[in-house]
Length: 417
Image (cartoon, rainbow, N blue to C red; front, side, top):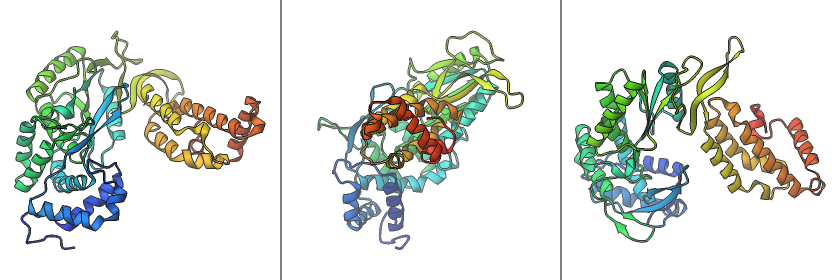
């Protein structure tokens, strides 16, 4: 493939499309409004990719509507996602890959979400350190952020860094693409919003919040340390008065940017521990699936216990894992032996441990005690000799653990269950 095709009006190469395709395929995902799955796309891949490249490189590509789907939120409500077609996701990836390196040069070190070589664990570690150094946290929640991004303000930010008209007109088309609702109704955008589910949306969101929050804080309020992961932000303040003043100023700042703080979810939190004994009703906040709160901690030097302020897997995250176990129907698995059960479950267990076991891993033990109950119930259903005796089934489980200590992933690293 030639890197550039001089006959086209837009400098998008076949190589750029191919590289974007590989990333979209690796990310998986469902079909859009055209109902073409990744398997169907791959069956006629050359035709689909050539058609996309030809249209994008000539400036004649217009994205189809995005398909609206509902996903469950941790608070029991639902979030609406806009799912582009596979071809459109590839097109968005082409522009994202082209623009991301230049945006990375300007983005704040305090921003961690949806950025290369940055992770949720890095953001959590930064918040942990900041909580040790400052007494107060301002836990920000922006109400309906992705639905309320102002297109006009976003384009001002884009034009500051993007001189290529072909990039800008494609981004404008994606911003204005209508949404096909579940009812079948086609809804046009009203000058704001970018679909959650779009490949380029996180990059555009980061650019918007770079100017709405990050740059504003770094220029105006240098004394405030903060961590932002997409539209979730944690700000650290020395005093309650400072935090209250900051909250009012942030509320005005976001209002000027067309955004609003969620009145119930935005809160002031006091980082109470053995040093900080002040009285404040709120001493806990959740961030990226972890809860930060006062916790009994053992001193690495003396071995004595003291009240620290730290993070561990949140109650809502534990609940989601329990729900996932229910969905997996562990008791009803049809494997002939415990080995098959372990092979089936280990990818899930590894994912839970690798993410939620980064800090205070022992807090995962109740999850794996629940898993043990499910596996014992599986054994009682599978083997006649355990149907009438729960104790015998648990003894069998302990024998398996002693004989095969690396069978389940969490056994390998010393977790209970």
